[in-house]
Length: 192
Ligand SMILES: [Zn+2]
Image 1: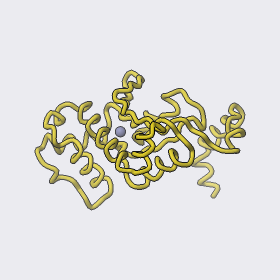
Image 2: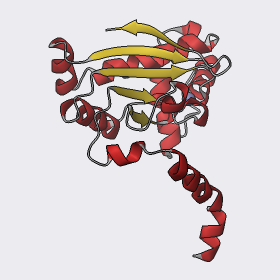
Image 3: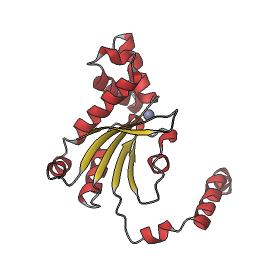
Image 4: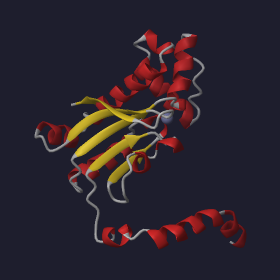
């Protein structure tokens, strides 16, 4: 236990700093009403709350490698819309995405045969390959491949009857955005 505390001491120290400088958590202890749901990548350079200069409680974040929406991610989004009344869903792709880059390599090689589907990461990359492989230009244009993957996530999102109904009733807006790792700029590209 002492060793573990030592290894994580840096995080504990940063939490102490957070407690001294931030009081938002006190208000939020009564409940959360995030306006935005951001579905993004786990890439540590793309934290939505930080890049959108937002506060604790502003953004309901769902982050997975490649921004791929699986069943648990979809359930999380449904929860935010149905129970927290979040009004805007941003599928936030980002430049230089490692997961899409791996899928792109398969496309450039001409087949998904190299996918190691014995592990979850291999299966994830394979699913991204399926999202980008209908356009051969994606073999050389990484940003377009990243956006095609984001569009596939939007399609997956709209399979949810909860999200589809909320969007049709104008209760929720869905957009695709691209965060640029080099410039730090977030652009909204497509709004449903
Ligand atoms: Zn990524």
